[in-house]
Image 1 (tube, rainbow, N blue to C red):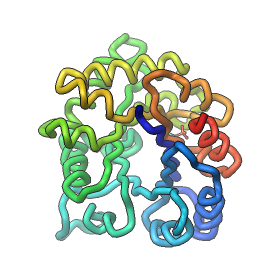
Image 2 (cartoon, protein in one colour):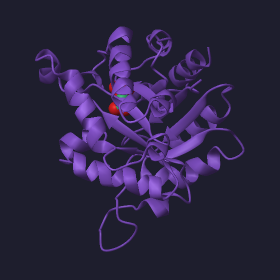
Image 3 (cartoon, rainbow, N blue to C red):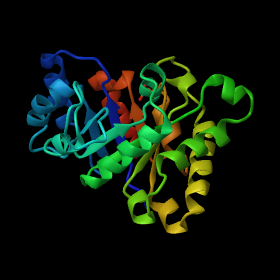
Length: 248
Ligand code: PGA
C-alpha cells in the first residue's frame, strides 16, 4: 500500500511573513494517513522549517545543484539542503523550459539527492503538441528512463515521480482523472521492466491545476499516489481540502 503524498510547490511566491503563516496553518492540519510536504522558496526554508517544527509536515526544496560544493555562484547543493530538507523537486518543467535543463542534468540532480539521503521528486510531463501527436506516453516514459538512468532498483524505490503535463500547469485545465491514471499506469509499467517490486512501491503523483474541486477524483485513481500542487498550495483552505481528499 503506497502512502499518499501531497506536496505544495510554492514556486517563487510568498513573502517571509506569508510563508511562515501558511506553514503554521499547514502544520495544524489533520494529516493522518497522508505525507504532507511543503516546498517554499530557498530563503524561506529555514523560517518555514521552524514554523512546522513539532508537526509531521515535511519540507523540501524546489531544485538543487548536483555538485556538493564549489564555484557555482547562485546555486545550492544537496548537502546544504540536507540540513533542512527531506525532499527535493528535480526537473520541474519550468526549469526545463525557462532554464533549459535537460535530462542528463536532471539525472545528475536525482543522483545527488539520493547520495545525500534525500528523496527526489522527479517531474516529467509532455507539452500539448506532443499529446496532440499521440506521443505523450513515449515522451514521459523516455523522461523517466533518462531521469533514473544508472540507478539500481533500491535507489529507484526511494524516488517519487510527478507526472505534470505542461499544458495543465497553472492553466486551470487539469488532466482528467482518467488521463492522469493512465499515465501513472504507463510509468509504473515502464518501471516494472526494471523490477516489479520497484514499480509497486514508487509513488507517482499527478500535478497540473490540482484544486480542492478536482483532487478527490484524481486521488481516487488506482495508480495516482498523491499530488504536486502549485497555485492551490498557496491557499490554506484549498490545500487543506486536497490533503483531506488524500486522507480518504
Ligand atoms: P499548478 O502547478 O498546480 O499551479 O498547476 C503545479 C506545479 O507546477 O507543480
